[in-house]
Amino acid sequence: MAFLELNEVHKSYGATPVLRGVTLHVEKHQVVCLIGASGCGKSTLLRCVNALEEINGGDIRLDGDVVSGEGVDVNGLRRKVGIVFQSFNLFPHMNVLDNVTLAPTRVLGLPKPEAETQAKALLARVGLAEKAAAFPDSLSGGQQQRVAIVRALAMNPDVLLLDEITSALDPELVAEVLNIVRDLAADGLTILMATHEMSFAREVADQVAYIHEGNVLELGTPEEIFGEPKEERTRAFLKKIIEAGRL
Amino acid sequence: MTLEKNSASGDKGAQSPRAAHPSPVGSANTLLLAGLLAAALTIAGTGFAAYLTISVADTAAWKVGLGIAVCAVVALAVATLWPLARGFRQQAVSTKAAAAGDLVTARTFRARAAQSGWTTLGSCLPLLFIATFTLFLLANDHAVQTTFFDVQFMAKSAADVTVAFGENVKIALLAEIFVLVWALVIALARLAPTKAGRPLRWLATAYVDTFRAVPSIIVIYLVGFGLPLAGVPVFSQMGPMWSAVLALTLTYSAYVAEVYRAGIEGIHWSQMSAARSLGLSYGKTMRHVIVPQAIRKVTPPLLNDFIGLQKDTALVTVIGTVDAFTQAKIYSSNYFNLSSVTVVAILFIIITIPQTRFVDRLLERDTRRQQSKG
Image 1 (cartoon, rainbow over the protein chains, first blue to last red):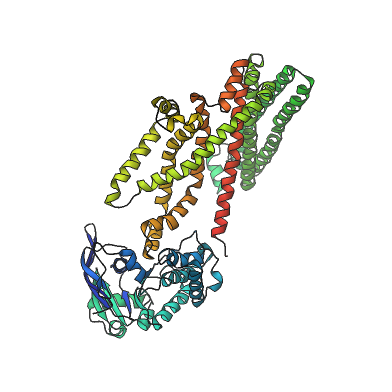
Image 2 (image 1 turned 60 degrees about the horizontal axis):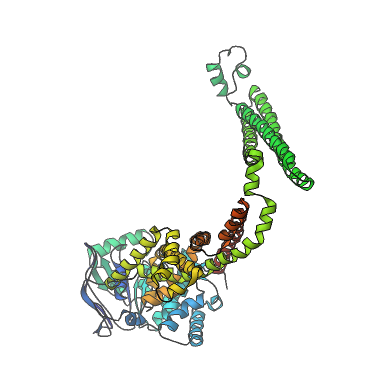
């Protein structure tokens, strides 16, 4: 039994199906990358794991427990599953330190000084120790995204979901964010990430899933997916990526 | 190209196509003549108003004080001739340049001449307004002025009216504090999530619909007279001041609830996602993330409603609270003169303007804070 399991997950918005029976297993300490065209369902899949979207069929299990469906303690689930978004979504009315300590103090009930000590250590780890008192609007995109990662890490999650976290960044800021993800992966954090950064996926992922029209069309090691993809559609997708100079 | 065009259409083209053809640039003469007419009218109007003002003033001090003011207005009226003269000079340059075939210079100076003409017209308008208003005040042997702006009577009533105005300020401040809280409760009820929240949403909607529909003067009347009449415990012993606070709170909470709701709905849903994804409950998300941002956004429209509320405190006169308006009416009916009511109007203006500036400053400070590098 895998640590995080999606079994036959279905999700539709009204009459439009977005996920059509996705099955995907993520082992503990693994990094799994989701690749695929825009609108294929990568983001929706991640939002479902975090219960930001309700699923219409199948189930999601974390560490053996079913965490989808009615009656599940979503706030409890979200303590164990962190998510970082493409557009950072920091709280603009709070400074960096308050952004990071909000959930630990208000959800876990950590005393403020303790939460701040922990937050400062995490900020130092991503190279933002001096930015603790700054407000999000004064930071670059890369810095904001690093704060967003720290904000998720402050809850000490078992799984981290990353939803195209470099897509909204200027090219020269992508590396500073990816370096942190590389670090976290090396430390053994379980990561499920949707990404367009193919070379990064190739380097860091244990498994790569090619998502097509709401389903996992092909799953394999980076060598298999990028080296010798079996599916015609995966090859077509990767060919376009190569033409765009992204691989 | 210009040459071609001129000779093609020119009737006297054979001799000198450039000079003979009417300028293709056009002229600002009509505009300048209109400006001249307006300036003449303004000088005449302000001059006449000035003459009347000085002849009507009853004491030497008034003659001097008002004389200086009206002479300044007449001087401004004469000054509108200055841009006009400049405009005529510029038009002359333009005409000459056009005749010489220098179209660029001609066009430039025509545009400047037109601008000068508009400047004169624009300056004449407010001055004509001042002259008309002065003449209105002086109409019927300056009866208008003595009815609304009898300075001596204004000074006499000012002390009592200002003291009574304290009652308006008190009612407004108390009502505003209650509105801030009660309106937020209604707004959150209107946005109550899930199926279970539906009756709450209906109730809040019904409240807003009702109290936005009923005129505040009716609510004040019903609360102020109705509750004591019905002998409801506590409410019947409130007294007119607290009745007014209650009535205004009920009415204005409906407006402010809608302002809050717009602010809350205006916060991008991704903020909700981000907060919920960290494990914060709906209530905590509202309290720590959504509402604080919403309140910052709605401060200007909130002030708008508060100014409305402050003005409506004058309505409490219908239930016999001795506020500034009631006090002013006592004066005006004793002396058959409305200048004491003008004092009330002036007091409302005086307290409103600083609030607007204060909110502007507040928002500026907040923006600076949110961009601070810490």
